Picture 1 (cartoon, rainbow, N blue to C red):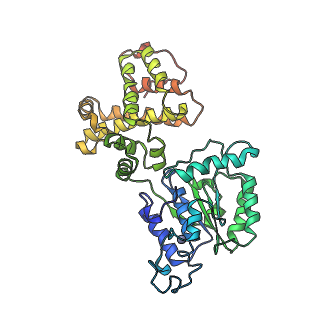
Picture 2 (cartoon, protein in one colour; picture 1 turned 180 degrees about the horizontal axis):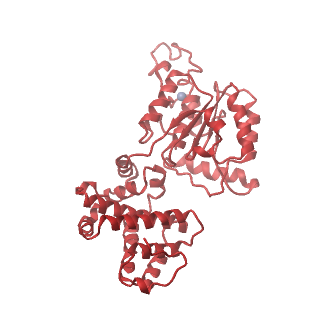
Picture 3 (cartoon, rainbow, N blue to C red; picture 1 turned 180 degrees about the vertical axis):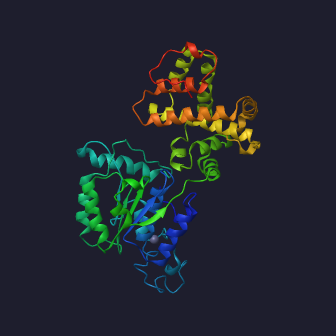
Amino acid sequence: MAIVRLSELIGQPTASAFLRGVVQSKRYANAYLFHGPSGVGMGTAALSFARALLCERASGARDTGPGLFGGSAPAAPAATLDDACGECSGCLKSVQLQHPDLKFLFPVSGEERELDDTIQETLTPLREDPWFVFAYEKAASIRLSLTRELLRELAFQPFEAARRVVVVRDADRMREDQYSALLKSIEEPGTTVWILTTGRPSRLPATIRSRCQSVRFAPIAESTLMEFLEQRVGLDTKNARLLAALSSGSLGRALALRDSEPLRMRDEALALLEPALRGDPAGLWKASQAFMKYGRTGRETLRRMVEFHQLWLRDLLRAQAGAERSALTNRDREAEIRRQAERVTPAEIRRRLMVLEEALSSIEGNVTADLTVFSTMARVAGSRVGEGEWPAHPTARWDY
Ligand SMILES: [Zn+2]
């Protein structure tokens, strides 16, 4: 199940300590805003925190004191609990996301009449897969019908627990009028605790942000990600290291790519440069199209291709700065890195990085993926042999 203990949040010592402190103090704000880069575990933390707030023992709501256990001392007195106990009836229900006082909203897309099915399609794997990763379409949103229903329900007392907990994942995906309705509820002192998460806090109205207790989440350290991928997901060291570097601190991203054979993908991405350096447009075009077999969307594939090249260039710069083997991401190809680092100037590496950076920003626009792979590689190869023979391309620029 995707709910983990607050003490088990991966790579978030500060947020974890803060939330456990809140649970232990038993003083809760009306609303919390978990913000940070996406994929660092804010959604998981929100459910863990919600679970602690609904736990009959940790929340202090039904602390019936000694005597409950027939005279023998309880394993952990409620007063010192800083997390869900995992054993009470509240915990057993919340772990299955079936606690009547736990409301969980997240963005969905698709037809309104299929909403129940769409939600179940997410909740079922979430209950079963401890490393479930949420993936949305670009247009997915927190549905108006669901927030309306929720706000109606909040007018009544909680069913079982002392309070109701509402978790809104990716709360930046709402409409203006939803925020105003939500704001009213957040401001009213009552029995509801709101936990909002967002990777894009600037998209939330300032009025909402200012009324939430802010909890910051940080990118996860590469070494922590690597350890996780090796020990918990079971990747071999080489793949784990590469994937950890590729994930830029996002566990969600690492997990989404866990079955993607990163080493092989990297080798094919790097090999794209060979026909470009040879000045072989036909060969490069064929290779660019073949590379599109990776990933669900061209955009995703394109991004990954660019990132593998960035990691490689980062290694070249490190090698030029005298870095040891252990500091190289692509250390399985160390000899090659050392060789190239001697031949390519730092200025040339910066030029290539700029080309790649530009490709990354064009990904946000309306680009044709294989064509962009082609032109990016051609431009990275830059002033090499065969430059004059390249087919003219409207977006091609050679003047770096
Ligand atoms: Zn409990």
